[in-house]
Image 1 (spheres, helix red, strand yellow):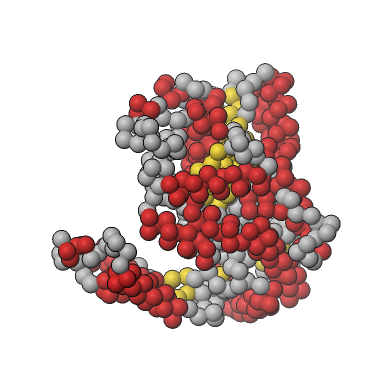
Image 2 (cartoon, protein in one colour; image 1 turned 135 degrees about the horizontal axis):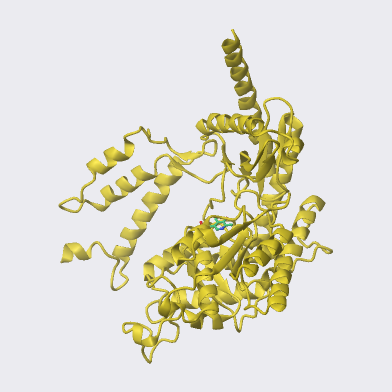
Length: 549
Ligand SMILES: *Cc1c(COP(=O)(O)O)cnc(C)c1O
């Protein structure tokens, strides 16, 4: 047993075992640092992902009969890290965070004491941190912290699922016993994340009862279409149960008008005498911008330049209404720069939890005791990781102002990127509003965006431009070790001149997520695109020539 004990941290806090653990940490940090290269995206060389790569992994995998040394364990782990993408200045693809140092330390503490957020007796650090960040962020968004509740969960996806579960249980408290009613309907924008799609599948509501609402040109939900579709549901005897208000769509950062949505639901409730309709703000992408809810743009203490200020001010107008939602989410592992998974699901009124809480008789092992006063029997998870610690540490280290600086920089870089892109390249169109994300679309010859969004092009013409962008995405994707751009095959849907089916628009994506993505880098990003585009156009036209010959 002595040998086995050596695999664990000490019981008495002796220097020797601590030094040993520290030396492992040091090796790992040093080796990873050695692999860093600011001119590349990856840590060292990417493995050769041949077609049988994972098959070979499957065949070789075996639990060793005898445990190997810690040195070998570390070596094997570092082998896995080799070629890993690293979110440095060359990463402009998606909302992938570079965990900040405070969050790394918060996670380390979480692991070292290994609390279970399920019950404070088993995890007091994470439980207190969870209550504390819930209160901090409730105050920030304008929820009353004395009646709100929150818990960390499995991502923005988990928050959507949890919120839908609350909505069902609130509407039909007996559904936990008898199963859910048949006629429930959910509404979301056609550009919303697939989280709701999965949730209506899993709750048994069914995808057919998820109604997609059209979007406006700024990628926010079209409210007339929402009202119309809700009234149609009511007219045929259905129950409008739930609206997902997306606060920052995943690809284009469209922000739904939650105040307008609330007006519609209240109006319908009054007119038709129906139950309160649940609104979840899917703020997985945009929620961090609530950090500007109390920013004074007049005195502008952080001295944001006018162009950045104007965007942030317009966000304030939208995000200050997020408090109207019954629940929302902070996905810190997106724009908040913490490790996966650190997402806080925030509920405006904790009374809603009573509909889903387990009866004490169902929880014989935990919670059901005189000791301990925090037991999250209402979560879908049983044991829960203490990711509130990473969130807590980040909030302390950044403060409101630190996050404001970080979040403003995403905007600043995007404004510069748009300007340089359209100045340097003639056949490109920027296709969304200024935000942490820029979507853009190239054209084989001249820009046809206006014709596209006004329904003047045929399906074939739109598809040809899509194809052009798709091929170019492959070209720059192969060079992603230099700069890694994102792309999407559904930036939005547009009408075509010769079809009543709407067509998806393909676009490229620039996502300024790394703290090392600054305006000084913008020329390099655009230069990369320009150089590859010129080459791509040349090879394409010579291929066409060959075909003609
Ligand atoms: C990313 C995202 C989600 C899913 O969040 P996860 O943390 O990945 O589970 C949900 N909604 C929106 C709008 C998102 O951008």
